[in-house]
Amino acid sequence: MNQFDVERIRQDFPILSTLMNGKPLAYLDNGATTQKPRVVIDTICKFYEAENANIHRGAYDLSRQATEKYEAARATVAEFLGGVNPKECIFTSGTTEGINLLAHSWAWSRLAAGDEVLVSGLEHHSNIVPWELACRAKGATLKHARTTLDGSIDVADFKAQLTSRTKLVSLQATSNALGTIHDLDTLIHAAKSVGALVVVDGAQAVAHQPTNLPKLGCDFFVFSGHKLFGPTGIGVLWGRKELMESMPPYKGGGDMIETVSFEGSTFADLPHRFEAGTPNICGALGLASAIKYVQSIGLDRIHAYENHLLQYATKAVGSVKGVRIVGTAPKKVATISFVIEEPFISLLDISEALNQAGIATRIGHHCCMPLMHELGIAGTCRASLAFYNTEHEVDRLVDVLKQMIEKRLVQLKGNSAASKSDDATQGLEEIFAKHSSGVAAESIEQVAEKLEEEFDLVDTELEKNTILNELGQKLPRTFSHLKVHTPAVSGCMSEVYLAGRPIASQPDRIEFVGDSNNDLVRGLIALLQHLFSGQRAGDIRAFDLEAFIRKIGLDKFVTLQRRNGLAGMAKRIHAFAEEVLKKENAKS
Image (cartoon, rainbow, N blue to C red; front, side, top):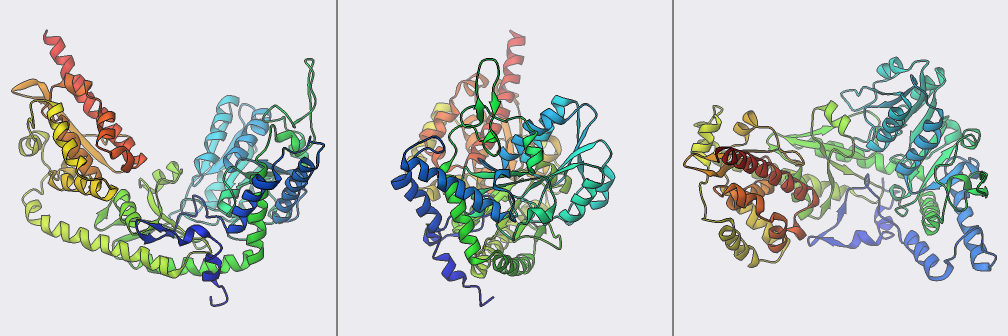
């Protein structure tokens, strides 16, 4: 790939020269959003500095010029999509709004009881929930095609799901979670054979290879600007003119009307019928600038380079012992989703280690919960690459994974002696007898004060995480045993198990044990155990945990996902306390 000057291209993206945690940023989260080239940033700044005016109705020069630029941006989008009619291109806030527009304007006005909408099992929630809501309202049925083991749509099952009642099929062009490029030609042809309309979610496709809608043959197509190196808050819905003209408006307001009266309003022609209110003018200009930028490089060249990166990353990540790549379809964009299974390392631990090394990836279900359920996993770590990424960044990713696995193996080896005598599953009574911490202090406030003093001594995220990790290292390892006896705590990205009960000698107090498969979460469990285990149920219920977390500074450093998990753990502990209070009240 010597002809592709990636180092030159990287100079166009200012953020790529920044540091994250003191390390050069390796941005591998392009499936969530892409970075913006200088030309896009300049376009947006220039509009607000020297060109800002509202469009379509102003009789002064600045407004006319803004209108011309806005409509020129629409023409740029139309050409980018294969030379479609610009009037068929509706500016939206993104893919999600485009699908919701269709679900309301087409599905709510066209679906009837007994009709069917078909999606695949790989779809993003944005391509499931809007159809689910429309089907529920109209008495229609939402169906889905199964997923194959390599992360593709099961074509045979897809065809079997199609019937004369199938009115619409909505599919991703490319899986956001696994990177699979779907066989749209086959799927669209099958859908058309039963007379169904076809919606294609192109959010993950348009940045990686040329798009030609006349050749593709779908009826509607949606994508987002921010995944195409453009601004957030801008996207496009394309639809065949005759279909769009037959649909009622999605939103009411200015610019989408022809006439308004209290007796009844009439609506504007395409595309303005579906663009109520002041639009994201600079977003449209920024999107057009982004399109021209990728076209200047060449989407065919981009596709070839990213395919090279995909092959390199697949081989490099796949060679790490203990790592399993999830999604191995023969045709993919440059996305590697993976889990670490031997030894098991939680997604949160993976993400944190990569973050500390300056590597940005994404963990979780990637808004594809049905897919993860079908694959039998909670989620993956996803490294999604773009044409400004390099082999060296992939190497950095692999080095961190190897270091993590090596460190975990050493930890497991050090714990092996203790675990050999503890292989059999323990009952809850035995777990409490061995591992309950008892009463740490007479009151929660006394414990809280000591913890506050410890956390007040440090200021940085790393130092506070170190305290949590040290607390977690002292927490007894009861994960496999608790997993047998108690349900997982909801709201946690990692697996968390907590068991609680009244203390036999002091029934107004509770004791609890807990564990997680995530090191930092183990620290949070230990923190809660210090605060609450052995304390009176009424005091637990009255204690303001959120205020305490703010006071020790963890609200600034613990991620939103972990705060949600912390709230879930606190809810479980409060449930233990409520049971104790009920029993105490019953006695009195």
